[in-house]
Image (cartoon, rainbow over all chains, first blue to last red; front, side, top):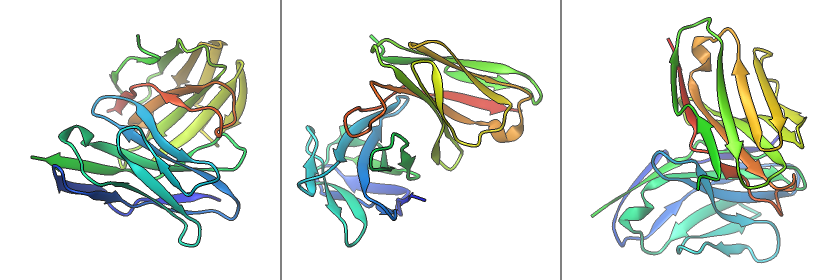
Length: 113
Length: 115
């Protein structure tokens, strides 16, 4: 069975500082990995995903995540955060070829001025 | 234009009641989902429908009955509500079932509180 661990329930950071949100997964088979973002009072939106190929994937708003198979991790990073990045971030995994997403418990990113 | 919409946004009810949550998507997708997010923010899939046919049922109590009258709608009916049913319920949709090709789009959620 697959599972996802997001160790940090909340990450406070100052504007323009770098941030890393951690995600570790467990699976006995190949997986696809996803990061979703949930802004206040909204549904989840796909931020980025790893399917195959390059282990570093990027989003259009400056986030990136690196798939590390040996460490079973898919940490999300951004070199300089904005106030508008304040949101809940969910890591998710799916067994290759299947549609079911298994989510972590989320990390709340709080960006303050 | 809201891609995936849910009604109501908030639902407060007494134990033992029966309630429904409605979901509609205007994206032309053929696959829809219901997820439950509990008080610890754990988000877990409940059901998935493809072209009105049930394809995932994650050992959800049979008090929960999804109904898909057409591809654009997936409603969730809950009988005999219990305190443990209190959660945020998210609807989602995608075009097709293969995650590697088809992003899931989520609704804003329905916060159900059972008293």
